[in-house]
Image (cartoon, protein in one colour):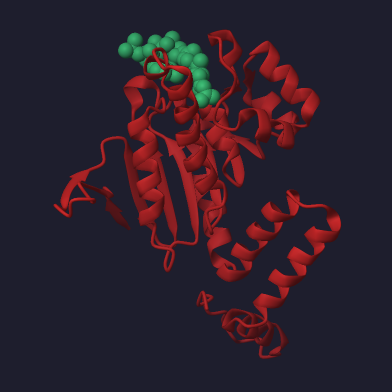
Length: 282
Ligand code: CAA
């Protein structure tokens, strides 16, 4: 296990390389699984600009040669992420509001299009920006005390980090509109019923379950997994004729990999004593 605090490099433009540990993000690499923890427990892991910047930098630092799946979670037992920081937003002008929305959207889009899968382990409140960041991940699982919602209209704003778009795509426009217009929070069992999460676990089992799923993903051929993510994401934004071509191309690309040659040769080899080697990511 390799636990470390990602470094934050500041003053990049003037070349005076000063490094500072991140304040609000923890990163831990466990074999081929990277665990990112939003660590601002006193504010229920609310997303201020600094958290968003540090998350952005952490994603840039993930070693894609060794890490094959990420888990995103929040510090503590109570909250995954309780939204964008209301204190920071309270005095924004129109232009600043738009810029803050863009800052969140840019990092969430980076997460959504990150080359390897990301599992959100939602360990409590996932409200506003918290629900939105979970929806930027490939897969959501949650603890039994999780609460999801888009409470923004109760604060006088719309969801601003992709909620109007991703919630409608995930649970359908009717349910998304109901959740967003009413600002009603839903508990884990309802989130499961409407397809917002894939599974609910007792709080104490959540991370073990997330790591188990990530470990299973990490054992599969990494380039094939990445291509699946790309095909699903890009295909969802295309019509079926284009989407099928996207899949054909990514399917074809796999035949240039050593992992495809090894995986198929292993299947065809009738020697029952053989042991499957890890895929090489080549
Ligand atoms: N922003 C800033 N601070 C927050 C926060 C947020 N989104 N959510 C919680 N906190 C802070 C509280 O202010 C409080 O700080 P202090 O101890 O300094 O007073 C601390 O976290 C603990 O919170 P509470 O005392 O409120 O805890 P609680 O158990 O009574 O309630 C809660 C928990 C129901 C999650 C409640 O904190 C809450 O409703 N939070 C706000 C949720 C919300 O509206 N999120 C959406 C934000 S808007 C958004 O995200 C826009 C977007 O799309 C980009």
